[in-house]
Each structure stands twice: as C-alpha cells, then as structure tokens.
Length: 201
Image (cartoon, rainbow, N blue to C red):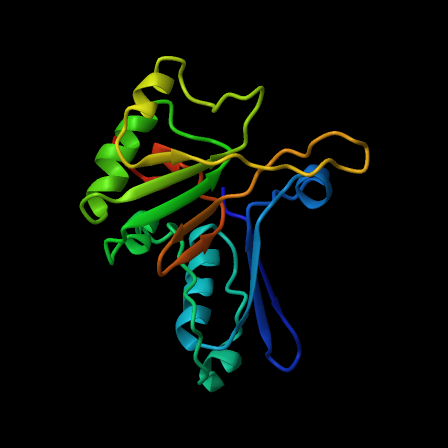
C-alpha cells in the first residue's frame, strides 16, 4: 500500500517522495493528495530506504559508494512498516495531548480503534480530531458507529473543504496526514486496523 519514490542523480544527491497518491490519473491529477518531499542526507535514512525497497522485493536503490561517503544529517525520519515497526507507536511515542487525522478511510469499528489503539498511547484527556473525506455528509463507518462516536470524549470532527476541480466537481480527498504537537506524518496510512497493524484483522 505504500507510495514511495526515490531519486538519485549521478553526483549522489538523493530525494525521497512519500505520498498518498497512487500511480493513477486520479492520484496524480484529480484527487486531493498529500506529498512530502525531502532531500536525503543521512546514512540512517538511506539505510532505511534500502531496507524498505528490499522488504517489498526490490533492489537497493542506494549504491554502496553513496552510502560509504554519506555523512550528512536529516531532521526527519523515513518510517515504514515493511520492517515490522509500528507507525502508531513511533508517532505517539511522546504521548501527545492532541492528534489530528486526515484520512478518507476509517475502521468500521472506529470507536474501538480510537479508544483501544490510539488514545491509550496518548496523554490522559487527549484530544483527537478527524478530517474525513465526506461523501453525502456522512463519514465512512458502520451506521451504528455514528452515535457512538459522537459520545466519545475528546473526539472532534472537522470538515474537509474540497475545492472544485476545473470541471466544477469536487475532487476526492485521498490524503493521509497525521499531526501531533511535535510530529507530522504524511504517507499511505489510513485510519484502519489493517493500516495501523492493530488488533486481529
């Protein structure tokens, strides 16, 4: 499910693009997507990129000579679940007091995911804000979940404000963005059990 592009020129300058955009016409032209692009300077991130591509069956994109001479630093980290690491544990390891999640897809049992998977990793009294891609003014969860979610303390909903496309229709919001007081994560993680490796699924 990840969407990752790694580029490296002949001099060894490297760039990583991580996004929610599938390699489709909609993903690259019509949808509302989120993309994070960073120059890669650190050996740690280059090693993590090689680890990621090896785990998904590809070849190491970073050549050994580049790894040998790389001594830079990055103020960001490439996190992926191909090595068994938990995105959610890394994002919430400092037990933040607030989390905003912009995702088009949510767990059917979203209340359970939030209570037993997210809020238990956050500070007591934490606030969670959801920004869904709303279709017909309804969030995509099971019908019985809506009233239960409204009663969950600390949960707020924020309206996505899609801009009409050139054709006049609203573009689908396909972005996956996670924001705490200290961290921003952009990638392909929806707010679902399978994406976050929570509970048996």
